[in-house]
Amino acid sequence: MMPLFHWLQYTPLAQTIRHSAALIALLEIIHLVGLALLVGTILMVDLSLLGLGIGRQPVSRIARELNLFTAMGLTIMLASGPLILCSEAVRCYKTPAFWIKMALLAIAIAFHFTIHRRVAMAEPPAPHPDARIVAILSLTLWFGVALAGKAIAIFQPA
Image (cartoon, rainbow, N blue to C red):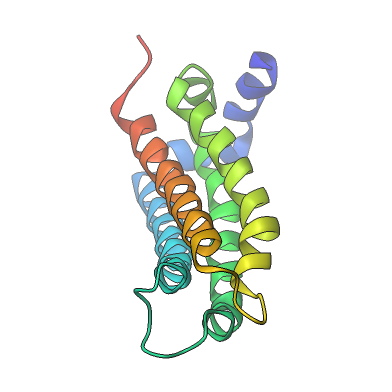
């Protein structure tokens, strides 16, 4: 896979991004806005699943109303992430935190669109212990994605 990452880093787009501090900063801001939107909406749903949510609103209603914003956050992240990656692809390839982030991201997306969605949208609501387990797993996965992303910047390869 290293040849693919090497090629990616030296594409004209990657070189343009890498040589523009303003463009890198803009992409990172966009990526963080997507993360805030995604994790913020998921946090609201998961807190509701934990019984700590918005007043007396059913979890399914909260999840349904926030679904578009959650999808927008994920879309923003999935669009901006590869652009950030291409500017430093070789370094990311050599950083274990990058691979941890990618694995957690794949698991979190699969979990969100299967188990989490089924429990959050359940009518009548899922039994309380099941909902709590799903919420805790969801929060753990998404915060793990965010922390691993931060670790990419902190833990540089030798």
